[in-house]
Image 1 (cartoon, rainbow, N blue to C red):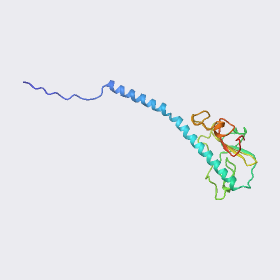
Image 2 (image 1 turned 60 degrees about the horizontal axis):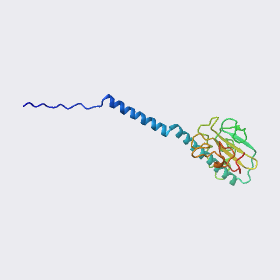
Image 3 (image 1 turned 90 degrees about the vertical axis):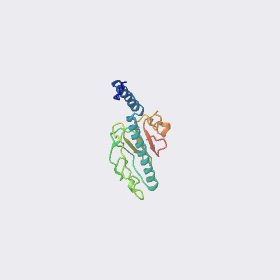
Image 4 (image 1 turned 120 degrees about the horizontal axis):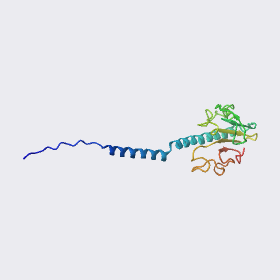
Length: 186
C-alpha cells in the first residue's frame, strides 16, 4: 500500500476577498466622516469658545461696574474686524487685546480693585468679516457684546440655538448678544 503525504496548502487571501475588505473599509470610512462631520465639530468648538469669551468679558464688565461705581464713559462702539456692527450699523475697528481701555473693549478693566479679571481681551477664533466680536456702550453705563455663531448647532434655528431673540434676550436674531442693556437693543 502506498501512502501519500498531503502537503499543506498555502493559506492566503484571494484577490476577490481583498477587494471586498477594501470596499467595506471604504464604506465605513465614508460613513464615519459623514456622521461625525469633522468640519462641523471644528465650527462647534469655535462657537463654544465664542460663548466662553463673550461671557468672560460680560463678567469682567459686571465686576468693573460694581467696583467702579462712580465711573463714567461715553457712547462708543468697537468691532474686532471691519466697520459693520450688528448693533448700530457702524463701529470703529480695533483688534487690540489689552485690558487698559485701549483694546476692542474700551473700558479700563485694569482699574478694578485687585486688577483685571482678564489678562487680555479674547479675539474671535476666526476673526474675519463674518465672525468677529463687537462691543457697544452708552453714556448711561449700559453695554452689549455680540458674537456671530457659525455651527449648525448654535446658529439661529439650530439644535442648541443661542442667537434667536427668545434665546439670548437680544433684538438681533442672528447674533449672540449679552450685556446689561435691558433689551440688548444697542
